Image: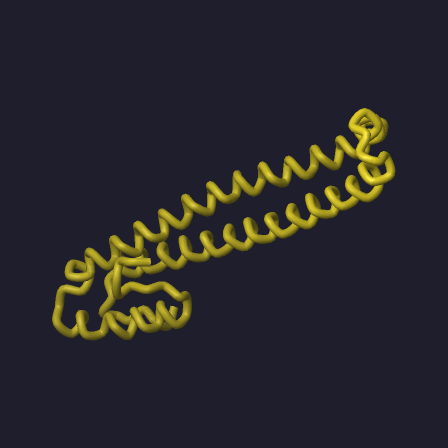
Length: 148
């Protein structure tokens, strides 16, 4: 990549590539979680409106008629199975997303903490800010401070 100068050693390059990869993985999983949340919300809302308008309202709130109308059509149970599966997938991907965020943050903090070891010479120390600015601008990765 064009931002790796000859003054940056191989270990630093690998750490930078790893933090970029972890950031991209976290971003990708975040998009999956948000998409699933939107689709699941729309699905649950639509199904609730359908049940309210076509099952509850016509039966005038008679519990036995409502339950009978709902259970007479197996499609209702399949829809519920799909919706709850989507909800489970949100929980699954949310856990993966949180883990990816923790890994990204841990590696980012490690780079910040090891800055003195990674850029030992005075000239390298001064040049690192160019790399930090590029990482912030290009990938939105803050290597100046440990806080999120």
